[in-house]
Image (cartoon, rainbow, N blue to C red; front, top):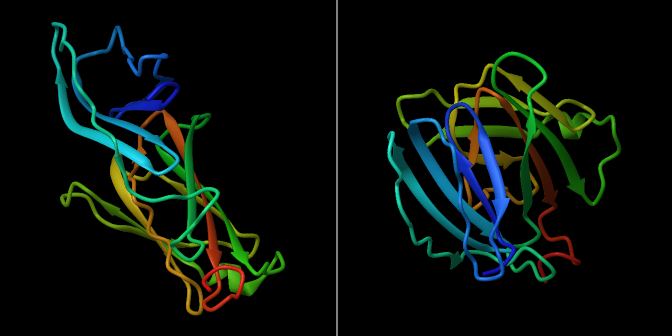
Length: 192
Protein backbone atom coordinates (compact mmCIF):
# COMPACT_ATOMS: atom_id res chain seq x y z
CA UNK A 1 0.00 0.00 0.00
CA UNK A 2 2.01 3.01 -1.22
CA UNK A 3 1.64 6.50 0.27
CA UNK A 4 -0.31 5.17 3.24
CA UNK A 5 -0.06 7.38 6.37
CA UNK A 6 1.73 5.64 9.24
CA UNK A 7 1.75 7.03 12.78
CA UNK A 8 3.92 6.09 15.74
CA UNK A 9 2.56 7.08 19.15
CA UNK A 10 4.16 7.36 22.56
CA UNK A 11 3.13 9.18 25.72
CA UNK A 12 5.33 12.10 24.61
CA UNK A 13 4.77 12.54 20.89
CA UNK A 14 3.21 11.49 17.61
CA UNK A 15 5.53 10.87 14.63
CA UNK A 16 3.89 10.53 11.20
CA UNK A 17 5.11 9.61 7.71
CA UNK A 18 3.90 7.85 4.54
CA UNK A 19 4.91 4.50 3.10
CA UNK A 20 7.07 4.45 -0.04
CA UNK A 21 6.04 3.02 -3.44
CA UNK A 22 6.56 -0.53 -2.12
CA UNK A 23 4.58 0.10 1.09
CA UNK A 24 7.70 0.27 3.30
CA UNK A 25 8.40 2.77 6.08
CA UNK A 26 11.11 3.41 8.67
CA UNK A 27 11.24 5.39 11.90
CA UNK A 28 14.76 6.19 13.11
CA UNK A 29 16.44 7.72 16.18
CA UNK A 30 13.62 6.86 18.57
CA UNK A 31 14.19 7.24 22.30
CA UNK A 32 13.65 4.04 24.33
CA UNK A 33 10.06 3.45 25.44
CA UNK A 34 6.73 1.91 24.53
CA UNK A 35 5.02 2.78 21.22
CA UNK A 36 1.83 2.04 19.32
CA UNK A 37 1.94 1.89 15.51
CA UNK A 38 -1.01 2.56 13.20
CA UNK A 39 -1.48 2.73 9.44
CA UNK A 40 -4.86 4.11 8.40
CA UNK A 41 -6.28 5.36 5.12
CA UNK A 42 -9.82 5.45 3.65
CA UNK A 43 -11.18 2.68 5.85
CA UNK A 44 -8.10 0.39 5.86
CA UNK A 45 -6.49 0.19 9.29
CA UNK A 46 -3.56 -1.77 10.71
CA UNK A 47 -2.22 -1.46 14.27
CA UNK A 48 0.49 -2.93 16.45
CA UNK A 49 0.29 -2.06 20.16
CA UNK A 50 3.00 -2.06 22.81
CA UNK A 51 6.18 -2.07 20.72
CA UNK A 52 9.14 -1.85 23.13
CA UNK A 53 12.10 0.16 21.88
CA UNK A 54 15.32 -0.45 23.78
CA UNK A 55 18.83 0.71 22.93
CA UNK A 56 19.05 -1.67 19.97
CA UNK A 57 17.30 -1.87 16.61
CA UNK A 58 13.84 -3.50 16.70
CA UNK A 59 14.20 -4.87 13.18
CA UNK A 60 11.52 -5.27 10.54
CA UNK A 61 7.83 -5.50 11.45
CA UNK A 62 5.00 -6.49 9.14
CA UNK A 63 1.84 -4.44 9.55
CA UNK A 64 -1.28 -5.99 8.06
CA UNK A 65 -4.10 -3.52 7.30
CA UNK A 66 -7.71 -4.65 7.21
CA UNK A 67 -10.73 -2.93 5.70
CA UNK A 68 -12.87 -1.70 8.59
CA UNK A 69 -15.23 0.92 7.14
CA UNK A 70 -15.70 2.89 3.96
CA UNK A 71 -15.84 6.61 4.76
CA UNK A 72 -15.60 8.24 1.33
CA UNK A 73 -17.24 8.55 -1.11
CA UNK A 74 -19.73 5.86 -0.02
CA UNK A 75 -20.76 5.88 3.63
CA UNK A 76 -22.91 2.84 4.42
CA UNK A 77 -22.85 3.62 8.13
CA UNK A 78 -25.62 6.27 8.05
CA UNK A 79 -23.38 9.28 7.72
CA UNK A 80 -21.24 8.98 10.83
CA UNK A 81 -18.02 10.78 10.11
CA UNK A 82 -14.96 11.32 12.26
CA UNK A 83 -11.51 12.76 11.50
CA UNK A 84 -8.51 13.24 13.75
CA UNK A 85 -5.05 14.72 13.40
CA UNK A 86 -2.26 16.04 15.61
CA UNK A 87 -0.78 19.52 16.03
CA UNK A 88 2.33 20.57 17.89
CA UNK A 89 1.20 21.77 21.31
CA UNK A 90 1.83 25.44 22.08
CA UNK A 91 0.86 25.07 25.75
CA UNK A 92 2.11 22.88 28.57
CA UNK A 93 0.25 19.59 29.06
CA UNK A 94 -1.74 17.31 26.79
CA UNK A 95 -4.86 18.63 25.09
CA UNK A 96 -7.81 17.45 23.00
CA UNK A 97 -9.66 20.01 20.91
CA UNK A 98 -12.65 19.37 18.71
CA UNK A 99 -15.12 20.72 16.18
CA UNK A 100 -18.66 19.44 15.71
CA UNK A 101 -21.14 19.75 12.83
CA UNK A 102 -24.74 18.55 13.03
CA UNK A 103 -26.44 17.70 9.71
CA UNK A 104 -28.89 19.00 8.68
CA UNK A 105 -27.00 22.07 9.83
CA UNK A 106 -27.68 23.42 13.28
CA UNK A 107 -27.02 27.15 13.39
CA UNK A 108 -24.05 28.27 15.46
CA UNK A 109 -24.24 29.36 18.19
CA UNK A 110 -26.89 26.82 19.12
CA UNK A 111 -28.01 25.16 22.34
CA UNK A 112 -28.40 21.97 20.30
CA UNK A 113 -24.62 21.89 19.63
CA UNK A 114 -23.97 22.36 23.35
CA UNK A 115 -26.03 19.25 24.17
CA UNK A 116 -23.73 16.89 22.25
CA UNK A 117 -21.65 14.86 24.68
CA UNK A 118 -18.28 13.34 23.89
CA UNK A 119 -16.75 10.50 25.93
CA UNK A 120 -13.07 9.57 25.78
CA UNK A 121 -12.73 6.00 27.08
CA UNK A 122 -9.13 4.99 27.78
CA UNK A 123 -7.84 1.71 26.37
CA UNK A 124 -5.76 1.44 29.54
CA UNK A 125 -8.54 0.95 32.09
CA UNK A 126 -6.35 2.39 34.85
CA UNK A 127 -7.09 5.87 33.49
CA UNK A 128 -10.42 7.61 34.11
CA UNK A 129 -12.97 8.23 31.35
CA UNK A 130 -13.08 11.87 30.23
CA UNK A 131 -16.50 13.31 29.35
CA UNK A 132 -17.43 16.80 28.16
CA UNK A 133 -19.94 18.74 26.07
CA UNK A 134 -19.27 20.86 23.01
CA UNK A 135 -20.02 24.57 23.45
CA UNK A 136 -22.72 26.51 21.56
CA UNK A 137 -20.27 27.10 18.70
CA UNK A 138 -19.58 23.38 18.31
CA UNK A 139 -16.10 23.66 19.82
CA UNK A 140 -14.40 21.53 22.46
CA UNK A 141 -11.13 22.16 24.31
CA UNK A 142 -9.95 19.76 27.01
CA UNK A 143 -6.69 20.42 28.86
CA UNK A 144 -4.62 18.01 30.97
CA UNK A 145 -6.05 14.82 29.48
CA UNK A 146 -3.80 11.96 30.67
CA UNK A 147 -1.61 10.63 27.82
CA UNK A 148 -2.79 7.38 26.30
CA UNK A 149 -4.96 5.70 23.69
CA UNK A 150 -8.69 6.49 23.73
CA UNK A 151 -11.85 5.52 21.92
CA UNK A 152 -14.24 8.41 21.26
CA UNK A 153 -18.03 8.36 21.32
CA UNK A 154 -20.19 11.40 20.50
CA UNK A 155 -23.91 11.22 21.20
CA UNK A 156 -27.02 13.37 21.01
CA UNK A 157 -30.69 12.40 21.08
CA UNK A 158 -32.12 12.26 17.56
CA UNK A 159 -28.69 11.89 15.88
CA UNK A 160 -26.65 8.83 14.93
CA UNK A 161 -24.03 8.07 17.57
CA UNK A 162 -20.47 8.56 16.31
CA UNK A 163 -18.12 5.77 17.36
CA UNK A 164 -14.96 5.80 15.24
CA UNK A 165 -13.36 2.49 14.34
CA UNK A 166 -9.86 3.70 15.17
CA UNK A 167 -8.43 5.11 18.38
CA UNK A 168 -7.07 8.55 19.10
CA UNK A 169 -3.87 9.07 21.01
CA UNK A 170 -3.23 11.85 23.51
CA UNK A 171 0.39 12.84 24.07
CA UNK A 172 2.25 15.35 26.25
CA UNK A 173 3.62 17.35 23.31
CA UNK A 174 0.76 17.32 20.79
CA UNK A 175 -2.82 18.56 20.62
CA UNK A 176 -5.17 15.86 19.40
CA UNK A 177 -7.72 17.47 17.09
CA UNK A 178 -11.00 15.69 16.43
CA UNK A 179 -13.63 16.69 13.87
CA UNK A 180 -17.07 15.10 14.06
CA UNK A 181 -20.04 15.20 11.70
CA UNK A 182 -23.29 13.83 13.16
CA UNK A 183 -26.37 13.15 11.03
CA UNK A 184 -29.99 13.27 12.12
CA UNK A 185 -31.93 10.00 12.39
CA UNK A 186 -34.00 9.28 9.32
CA UNK A 187 -32.56 12.04 7.17
CA UNK A 188 -33.47 10.95 3.60
CA UNK A 189 -30.09 11.86 2.11
CA UNK A 190 -28.17 9.73 4.57
CA UNK A 191 -29.87 6.47 5.52
CA UNK A 192 -32.30 5.39 2.79
